[in-house]
Image (cartoon, rainbow, N blue to C red):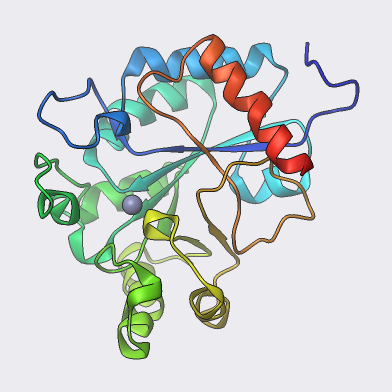
Length: 239
Ligand SMILES: [Zn+2]
């Protein structure tokens, strides 16, 4: 089914919120409806991709892994039942200080308020097979942080999330996709196994595990636009 004569590399997709874009939202592209998510699963299956975890997608070709940044309550309420019914798992990266709260970092610049999953919801999702990863304490722009702030956002956040979940947290996601060598080194030193960034590209065994590429999926990334984005990821990866 795939255009490539060889088995394609794997892909990681990046989502944020579930639902219809709110007119007053500053980040309307971050909303994906249930119908849009179902359409993505159909397109990826038609292209020959198998669903798996982020860790496995880095090792095996022909797979896709879904990631959700920021920890919105709508991921557990809307996306997770669809994914479970389809036999698909995902990783959700949560902002530890904001668990059970709202998207204060977006509201501060004028966005509408959205609920974030609370501790009980995160424990239930983890128990049901969703991987919960760390997306800092406060959604800070990490390259601008002092050493002390960096430690809190990367190390303290990991320990607090592990205490809350009662399990290891191997995954990290850079807010705004913003990282530099100092930030990446701090993530490695904190004991994370991998970190996701936001540049476009395929997931292959030779990509840097601490700046994993992802496809940013927006509300209108459906049908041929989804196929075009997948093709662009391979072109970027071939550079
Ligand atoms: Zn984020």
